[in-house]
Amino acid sequence: MSSVVVITGSAGLIGSEAVRHFAALGMDVVGVDNDMRGYFFGADGSTQWNLQRLVKEVGDRYTHHSVDIRDRDGLDRLFAELGSNIGLVIHAAAQPSHDWAAREPFTDFDVNAVGTINMLEATRRHAIDAPFIFTSTNKVYGDTPNSLPLVELETRYELPEDHRWYGGIDETMTIDNSMHSVFGASKVAADIMVQEYGRYFDMPTAVFRGGTLTGPGHSAAELHGFLAYVMRCVMEQRTYKIFGYKGKMVRDAIHSHDLITAFEAFHKAPRVAEIYNMGGGRFSNCSHIEAFKIASEITGLEARTEYVDQARQGDHQWWISGTGRFEEHYPDWKLTYDVPAILREIYEANHEVWKS
Image (cartoon, rainbow, N blue to C red; front, side, top):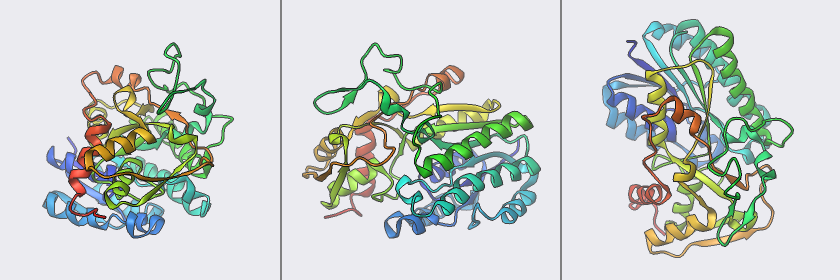
């Protein structure tokens, strides 16, 4: 079996979790990351700290390349060098913020859409049989979820129990006729291209449409990193701005570990051109109000929030992923972290660093 896994965004949240996981399984990991996150979000968002930790922890099993995924020739050279040793490709590098994308649409599209086709083409040329996993986003559905018949409860919005998506939104929701944000649109382009390479070139590709991906490896910044930034704000006594929907908007959250075990399941039994909604589902979800309550209980500190009446454009009022399709294909996979467990781990991982 080919023993190398190529991981883009290898110092980011999902990338670094994948590096540790697949290195522990005995694979050699080639990481591709040029810390664009520092450019997107400043010092808070830089992944340099995570890279240094990775290099120390994973040792010889990890080789780092500071290649930009927009650098087509650079990627092609790297893949040509590794060739048929590549047994898996995990493409997790991205510009991840819809607020930021509107400031620099070219950069956003070049990273998210063009960077993805660069990765697909390098894989097709040099390792066509390697499973190709892409971290997409639920933003490909645009603001369509906001047309659901939501009911307002005390701390959250909720779907009626008899609604077909009460257990979570599945992959049959349309991606058309909605506002996606510039970020969402660049991810749609990438998402469709990953499917297309699967179908057209018969490559084992999978699109994982994530909701809130989280965990202690998150470089928490205001524009990206919901639960980690909630915990950071409470611990450092920063004021968190809640945008719209009375703070009752619902997110499901999946710990990076649970996402990576899903990747491993796909790697062991790959399929062609699959799409999966992937998140915490009914097992792990919360509203902003509920998240702050849990964070306060864990830290013993008061949460400081400021309410801004205007919701972010294209933001989801309610999102819970239906993971039934993935579970049907991979029945041994299970979620292990719920929101309180995620927040507690983020607290424990950062209690020496994030202080008021």
